[in-house]
Length: 317
Length: 316
Image (tube, rainbow over the protein chains, first blue to last red):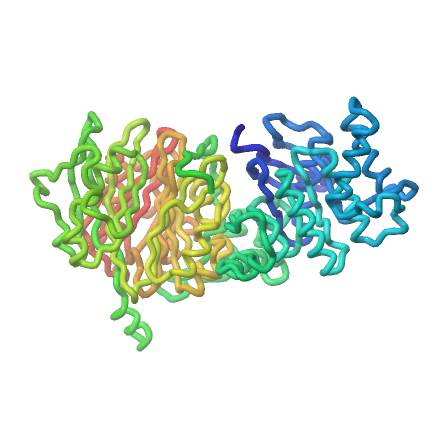
């Protein structure tokens, strides 16, 4: 089994622009996920997190780049990638059982009716709904509906689970409850998972790695943080871990750095960038101001050819 | 000079103690010391220089780099891996770094750098390398002084190509310099850098043909800089004659709209034309301004895709 179970390679999403070049919302998103790993994706609103997730799910056309799952390049949606959205989107005329059975029928067409029933009951029990299988969505709270959505996704036994802010509409207690439900399932089922979230604490608690996205347009992976906490996790132990606040602080620092309100986007062209630097900080060799020009973020225009491949050393990060 | 400036100047202490260039023989079986500079640390000079201190594959730090063909950064080295442990301890050396310099297929030179560390010093030398199963750079080895918190978090951070200083060095296949680390948007650990007092970062790629072996970072503070002057010279056509100062830590160079007609200083030209690292001991050979008050330095060329890409300068 390759270490690289899911590979997202140079993913680009561009939209046509009638007045100029296409607008690249996501530009060169690269991420490698190992089997069974939980990767959190965090970034400012509108940066393109959900765009990436829907492209990985096959629900949003990819402009360029590839998504490879278990050695196969994906092409459109499929039951190997299950999605849980912020809104559970249950069919209102079906019970919890019926909503989960819909997907199960599609994925397990050759098993007996009794076996399909067992599968549905098993996954509804996993999310704590053993006693609510016959309830309709209107009879369930938001948290219960989201549990049905989670059961529906996991019952497909996907190779990859995609969670798009799955707790965004829930109160904090329900949210914590469902986080533990999902972590319990992931510990048991070892499903490779990508979870989009705005919540720094949620990202640290749930993820093995956290992918921090830069602001759009032209969003990409800015930095990846390894979360060294063992699984299974206990919330109290995580909160009391000596690294917890350092890791949390690292995420917050990153988000603050890309806060559009605090740091307006720099000018686009290289010439404009240089002009902006010159205007902001007149360069006089030896003067105190000249010691602090921050030109690190400005790239040179020329290209030297194909990118360097990467030698590998050591074990897993 | 203001009082604050005077205090800074009297308290400044370079963390770098020595730089050496070792030439690899044609059979890649041994290395011979050809150039060196010792900064208030003459005791580090090995016996046999001039006559040619020579180490076999696997012997001493330079020999170890020859054997492994990757950068080697050793904290508190022992006698087995570093042949001058005694003198190094006497002058306060806490870490040694061996850098392989490749030109096309061959390992041609090994550069050895030695670093001091003490409670009053703040700085870091980081080795970022690819990890199994990832297309990212992670922190493989680290020497730091006075940066416990910064180092603790850095161990958990990874950079894809083009992100952060290591990722930019990887993308550009060239050395890269960042100043004002505490405020820089390009330096993604800027908050930690600001708290720790880090001001300048110099990134240098170790490249073998078209493969990135590692990225070295030198992270300096104002009180104990790893180098008193740092610069990057770039060439677009791979020739030494086309080298032009891209940037330096004073804000001078093409990155800031300076003219490209500037003469290429001797050590930079030599590093480019002879395709090798050069230790220099004349103040102006690295292109540093007079007020940098440097007396020696190291010019480090970078080759990728069979062409020279740039020359980085670290001067003391």
